[in-house]
Amino acid sequence: MISINKEEIPQKPQKKNSDIVLSVNGVSKKFCRDLKRSLLYGVQDFASDASGLREKSENLRSKDFWALEDVSFELRRGESIGLVGKNGSGKSTLLRIIAGLIKPDTGLIEINGRVAPLIALGAGFNPILSGRENIYANMSILGLSKKEIDERFDSVIEFAEIGDAIDSPVQTYSSGMAARLGFASAIHTEPEILLIDEVLAVGDLEFRLKCYRKLSELLDKGTTFVLVAHNPNSILSICQSAIYLKKGKLKAQGDAASVKSEYDQDLFISATNKSYGTTYFEEKPEEKSTGLDIIALYFRDEEGNIIDTPLSGEPVFLCVKCKSRITIENGILSILVKDPFSEGENILNLDSNIDKINFEILPGISEMQIQMPYCGFKPGAYGCRVWVKRKPNYIYDHAGFDFQVKSETLMSQCEFYQPRKWEIVNNFKEI
Image (cartoon, rainbow, N blue to C red; front, side, top):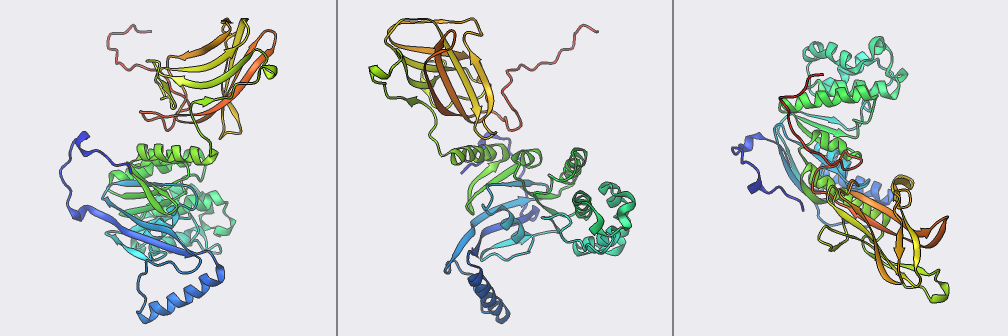
């Protein structure tokens, strides 16, 4: 589990427990995979609740599974946390429990303040009523009086940008218009706790940017956020910390960048189910060899040590170990790197001949290297193909391997590593 090392950061004055607005203690929730059994269990639980005899149970019934299992965390006023994880990991279930839409089977939720759930924007709107009527209904449900809604009504309309459509039935709205109105209604309740589930992907770019600015303002005013997003970059834009849920269990918790990095690594590995790093190949029988065989692919660091995982921004050598039975004049090394998660998109294509570099390869074992002063790949998983050939296009051998790149710095919203220096210049030449 990832955690913040408190000795490495300046210590702030201890906050009082009264600052805690959300406490999740050992929360678990189970569901049933069988529809008939689920309906039966629902009737039994309803009867038990009505009679006051139902007790929270840690035992699974037939066909049950844990959607959430023993999740705990606390949030203080003005803090924000993101929930990351694959579909089915329990993120939305946790948000619905906090919102009070479903009850946990074990554990306790303690809330100190008004909660505004943005779980499905516009989902609570009555399609027959007008936008105006839905604003009053929606904000009333979130705890505002008619006087408070009257005072904020114009701000809601201005933020939602729906103009004259405010008096039209919501069923005539586009999905984007309904989403904007739902978002505007919720944030203008000025809640103490804001629950956001996959709603920042709606609308055009300008509206999304406006949403981020508004959320930033609310955060400065002390609003606490719990955010779910399939795009983890949204988490990094808003949240100070994050939780990584995997199959309902809390796998990592800490600062947002570290948690996202661990989630990304797990995602890459599980998506490909491949081994990464140094790869060795069996030597071909002489009758099947063209005269040169690739016998290994790997990376070396600056000190010459073989490494499985290069680091973004650090020097690295991509090495091709060969066994040659002949002397090859003007040998060429070609390298193609692809992104396996973007429909095989080419990331890098290098050819020593294009760079006017040709090799003389002597009989025996040799190592062809390409030196990269800075590894420019962002953290992730990649597929690499290598060819050893000579002009015009005679290929002696080719091979491939998969590798991962990690980073010791934040590169969550970068496509490549840019070497850089920072400075401020006071005495500069005016244009």
